[in-house]
Length: 182
Length: 280
Image 1 (tube, rainbow over the protein chains, first blue to last red):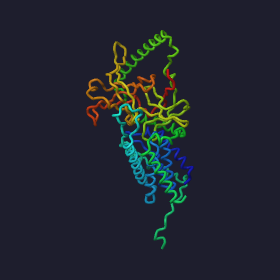
Image 2 (image 1 turned 90 degrees about the horizontal axis):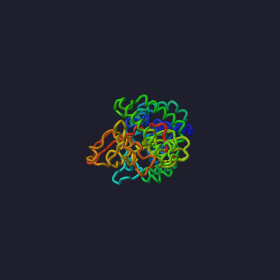
Image 3 (image 1 turned 135 degrees about the vertical axis):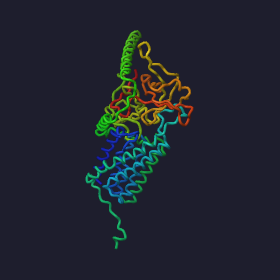
Image 4 (image 1 turned 90 degrees about the vertical axis):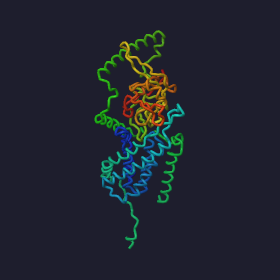
């Protein structure tokens, strides 16, 4: 994979996510363009590069937001492990593949964020009354965001698939099976 | 790098991320946080402006005040007259006290900053751009209609504002109502409650520390909540936090009230904000 192209993609999607994510929200559900970039890289890149790229995208998104450091790294690492595991078995050009992978990735991310929100509610800016806990982050918008991202996936991933030559993904080498030995 | 070697490295990175996110307290994991929002300004700022412009064209926001335009215009006029009268009164009193030099416009205490983007995750925050010298943690951030939040982190690469609507943001306030008496609009404090106003994380704020029976006959929808919190500087006391949009019983503790407070505008769509840099 050409890493220079990857970092340009990362720069663009993180900038767009920070700029447009909130304005595009619907009932609190925000699309996650960075997640779509993770799915795109993991669909096409060799395993090791895909895992590392997903982790880097997560780290950058963690640094760009106000949330806990490591949360998106971990989420996208899990998403990458899932997508890399199935990408040989799917037709990468088909819009349904894009929807399914983005939905699965979005649900994994939402699950991690929801568990984190449940375990560690946002910190109080100052403790006024010990009896009042900080409100937990609502889980529904997180899962709504997964569906929103999946709806956008054919558009975004379809567009990225058309320019994937820019990334110079090397074809994944297959291990020879018993049939080819014969 | 061999496959086995890479697996070990990746497993190590994932373990670090897991510990940082779920185990380590924020004060430790935040040590590794660096302000990199500023790097994305060439993309995030035009995208933020464009997306908000498109949204303002496509999404019709419900007016915050449902009264007829004429009633609002009449109230505006009365308020202007009242402000003018009070300005004269202040000038007369300050001249009497010989402290005129010390009294300046409130705007003189603040510096203006451009908003680059909102939060890239799922929290309520804004990233500021421009020359960020002089910014430090917990400085009040304002806009034309009231309080936005405070500076949560500031560095060379950017500064982040935690919004009053972000989950966990907590201030104390008081309730006020505007009444028209003898042609003058007066601000009247409603009750002597001390509401604890918490951001809900969904664009509004919630008050859940008051007994329902105490407030049921006193408070009304459209009453204002203003800042009254000794932790904040005197210059921002009385700043508008939002107006009451609903009063009900708290689901998990029915003896308590759940009061929802909405800011005058969607704080994640502001273009510019003011940061209180100096004290009067």
